[in-house]
Length: 219
Image 1: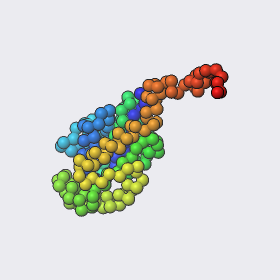
Image 2: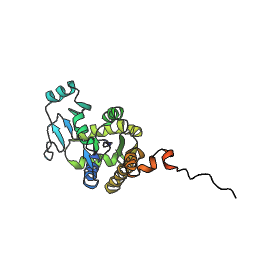
Image 3: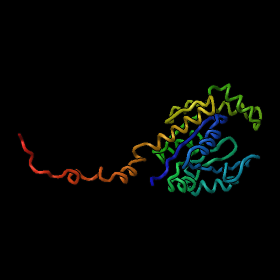
Image 4: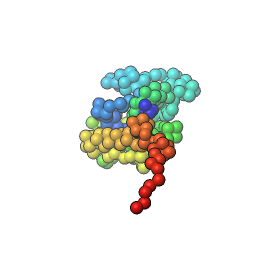
C-alpha cells in the first residue's frame, strides 16, 4: 500500500474550508484529517481531538522547542500548529490526509512534503465574505473588520496553490474538491505499484517476453 497523500486546504476566515472539509470526510473513503493543536480555548461546539487538540500556550511553546510541529503560526491571539505525529500516523496507513492551514503553514508543508496537493478556497467576493462572517455570530464587529482586512491582504496568495475553488455554492465547491482528490489518487505515481503487482508479465524483461520461433520462411 502506498503512503497516503497530503491535501492542503487554505482560505480566508469565513471562506468555508471547514465546512467543505467536513463534507469531504463524509463522502470520500480513505480520507483522514490532520487535527491541529491550538492554544486558544475551545468554542462551545468544539470537541477535543475532533476539531483541535487544545493546549495552553506554555505547552504549545514547549512543543515548538521540541520540533513537534511540521508547521505552526500565530493567528490573531492564539497559536496553531500541526504535529508530525498527527500526519505520519495516518499517511503510514495509506490514508490521504486533509489539512486546514493558513498560507504560511501551507508553504511549510509544501517545502517538507513537495508531493502534497494544495487547494485554496476563495469566496465570490469580499461582500459575500463579510456577510458570512457576520452571520456566524461568533465575532465582534471589530473582529469581523480585522478578518476582512486580513482576507483582502491574503487572497492574492491563492495563486501559489495548485488549485483554486470559488465557494459560491457549497455543493459545487465540495464536488470540485472531491474531484481533485479522486484525480490525485489516479496519478501514475500512486497507481504504479498496483499495476505492477496486477500485471507482472507486462514488466518482465523483453528477453523473457519474446520467444525464439526460429528462422522465418520467405516465400
